[in-house]
Length: 240
Image (tube, rainbow, N blue to C red; front, side, top):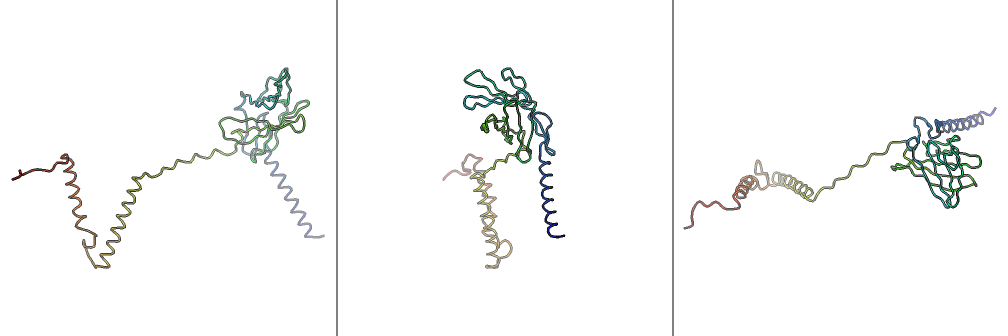
């Protein structure tokens, strides 16, 4: 017995088994005519139960009633009805009792299929986070087989990503203040280093322009006093 061939055959069988298990795990198991369960996620159109989704394509209008039936001439069991816009004609293109799911919302391949005596409707369902579900008609191929697309937030398997917080740009005043304090810091650091290591200054002599900075509080006080007086100088003596 060739050990190498046996090992290769076992490897391929393992891949096939894993593929089958993955496919079964991703299949959406039918719960009702408008809901199914895939893994931990439950897909349901129950919130659209009282809404009729319609689309006009050429001379026909298609009406889909999720989780229920739509009035279709004398037919009371149609989930999807095809109505002629040029003559009084109605066609059942999907009986509500025949609902079947294939694929899964987990990989965006979910398809809901309805059949009637002579027609088949396939609704491809995809995630769309819009407030309202969108129902569109794609084509009729082959004849009497209709393909629709339903974009709905109920097919989204993950929560909506958080809205990014708006960025607050710095104002011109803030930028100028930052530049001023950075310049002031550089001024003191470079000045102190220069005076201390080049001119060998010690104590307060190592502070750049020490006399100015020590007098600054007095200047500020005089300025505030002058402003509070209405910008008028104090007159203690009359001119001689």
